[in-house]
Amino acid sequence: MTFQELGLAPSLLEAIDVSGYTEPTPIQAGAIPHILSGRDVIGSAQTGTGKTAAFALPALHILDGHRKGAAPRCLVLGPTRELAAQVEGQFKKYGQSSAPKCCLIHGGVGYGKQRDELAAGADVVIATPGRLLDHVQQKTMSLDSIELLILDEVDRMLDMGFIDDVKRIIRSCRNKKRQTLLFSATVSEDIKRLIKGSLRDPVEVAISIKISPAETVKHEVYPVGAMQKFDLLIALIDQMEVDSMIIFCRMKVGADRITRWLQERGLSCGAMHSNLPQKARTKALEQFKDGKIKILVATDIASRGLDIANVTHVINYDVPEHPEDYVHRIGRTGRAQREGDAATIVAPDEQSKLDAIERFIEQQIPQRKLESFNYFHEPIIRAAEDAKPKRRRRNSASSKFGRRR
Ligand code: ADP
Ligand code: MG
View 1 (tube, rainbow, N blue to C red):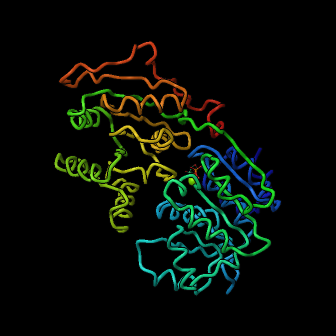
View 2: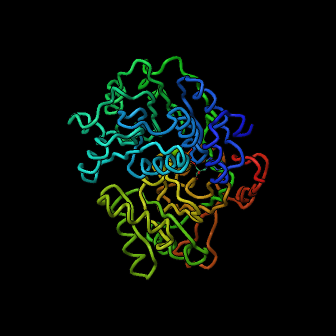
View 3: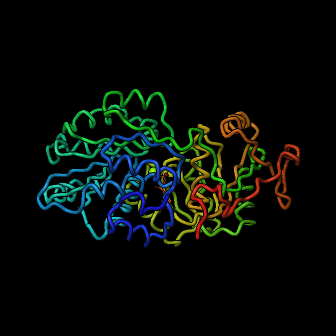
């Protein structure tokens, strides 16, 4: 399947070419034709497989440029400010020549600019649920004109407690001829319940029901006593050639503390979690993307969907609570066929969480001891035989993006 065969407008094909994509990913090949034919679609595929373009490209095709003075025709809902900003970025990238007007609506920043932009007329509104509802309530935006409603990262929106907001927004999109698209890494029973009756005879495009770690990520576990977690983190950083690393922590306070400790050791790093003001979050993310800081210390807010190019290393300072989050966290590296390394530091009391992850991904994660590190207690490492690293499959035909030319 080629992008040409999907029937997208020439200007979009050009933008795809400029982006360097040689062929559609499976979710793109599966979903785009249905969307273009006007069907409602439920699309699921693991994180990092190009779901954004799977809806943004056909949406731009359908919108076909800017309509002066028209009310917004397309609404994209996403869970976090960063993800919404990222989706806007893709709309702008692919829509460069047809140039529909995009308006980004999220909390943590002033209303004024958003109000002005809406009043000036936008074709696509990309929003997080809470702030969008504020605008609807204040009548600075009406959802009556929405012809294309896109719910992105729905699993995440439900995890974050947006279920009622999302329901209200769907109900407020009253255009009878509305086309609705839903994209998510997984489609749970909860999601099905949420959208029951909101989609018209939807086509389901499910690429992989089971989410599993990207094949381009080499992931390992480092057992250590709880007291030595931070020392081991430092030792790991020392022996890795870190270009860009994300360190995940479960707690916001933990993320702050580790950031401070790393900074005290002269390492260039910044923190990102939901207690920080939006300005600080955006700044940390930008500095990280621009390579001004090499290490981003984050809670799970950054683990899903955020597309930061060239993350070379991920370290889990804590074992994540939910097994899916493990896949999302390590999925920050090894994106779009680049290779990455992920290490998880495990204290004895986190073993059961690790077991749950291994059951979920149906594989054992190789365990390692860092030879250069001075352990207080000899770590218990699972037999070396089981611990062989999975062979990296660079350029293999079965890699999720297919072979690159
Ligand atoms: P998801 O929403 O499924 O987690 P994204 O839409 O964020 O994934 O896409 C992940 C990365 O893959 C992005 O950097 C995007 O530019 C890239 N990408 C998207 N489509 C293709 C393609 N057809 N070929 C190569 N890379 C792609
Ligand atoms: Mg996404």
